[in-house]
Length: 169
Image (cartoon, rainbow, N blue to C red; front, side, top):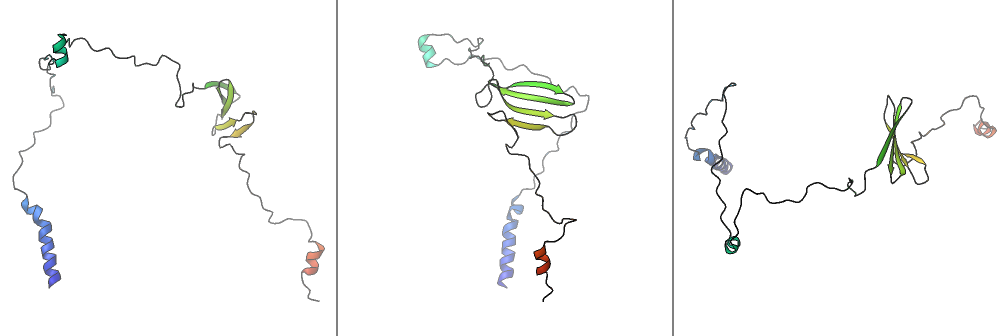
């Protein structure tokens, strides 16, 4: 009996917010505007008021002119462009060799990356080390598959294998 009373009390407690709501009905929403309605007209902003003079400007007697914008520092960098690390961007040389497009990336005159894009297929990226050797993008040699010798044809078994094979004598 106690679990049933507890369950009913818990249900009534959970339903209290539902009973607390009022039955006020909201006014109906206005219909949406038509496709060819002119819409809202732009309105002039209210008359500009002069800002109140601060205590320092009142003391000095300086007039506040709201028409002249304050001078701001230049927003453009006059120097040469830099990348995220603060270095100048690389010089890129693009050339065609047959059906392939070759892009050479140089920084400070030193070649550091070559991208070979074939007419059909995936572009290959090679990094160049200080010695001038090409490596793939990960810096490792290309993956070589592991080859296991499962069976050989045409060779006979060695003599020891035949004698150990077991005639049992």
